[in-house]
Amino acid sequence: MASVNILVKKQMTSASIDMTKGIGILGGTFDPIHYGHLVCAEAAREQFKLERVIFIPAARPPHKDLARLTPALHRFNMTVLATISNPYFEVSAVELRRPGLSYTIDTLRQLRRQFGPAAEFYFITGVDALAGLLSWRDPAGLLAETRFIAAERPGYPGSLLNELLAQLTPAQRERIHRIQIPAVAISSTELRRRVRAGLSIKYLVPETVEQYIVKNRLYREPRD
Image (tube, rainbow, N blue to C red; front, side, top):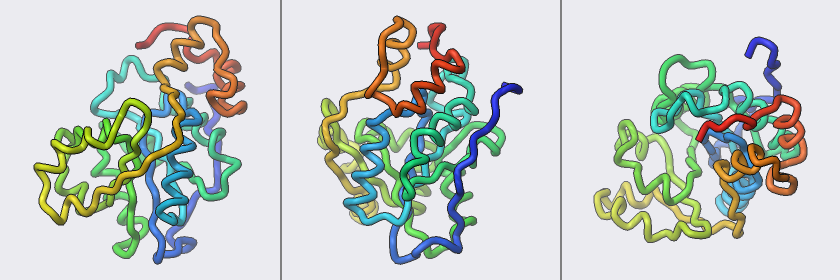
């Protein structure tokens, strides 16, 4: 870790935000980030007319086996490389800088302090992940802090949310929006498997990310 430099991309400030538009937030382990993440973020930005989408690599996600994760700094750097060409995409190291487990509610409240009460957040995630919202820390607080954009993709229909929606109040259900994204069936798990097997990941991740993986010899050893 000591020999790995952190890459920097211009960060968004509250002074540069158009408060009449929403701010997209896309969190994840990004291990590695791939075109599926990027397509989802751009589709949400366009459909909901978002001012920006902030990518937030999770440092210590509570639902993951931390021993199997690639070091957070590598995942952050790959996210910067993948998003640097899009002026509407930003990358935040907020979870890398905060000690302890990376709870989404803590991140949202930290962003709220940064951007103020007028900012409208839209947390972008897959319908499969959002279906488990009630197992997240403080789900009521999450629904108060942000709207959710649930991305439907191949194999993950919107019906996965039915059980969750049945347990929410009408006002809470109105804070969940669905979006269908182009059929980009890519998974980080499959990308790691391909690298270990010596197979190509070209055209599945941005070229800069592919080069970073090769240079830093990531995913050569099994973690899954």
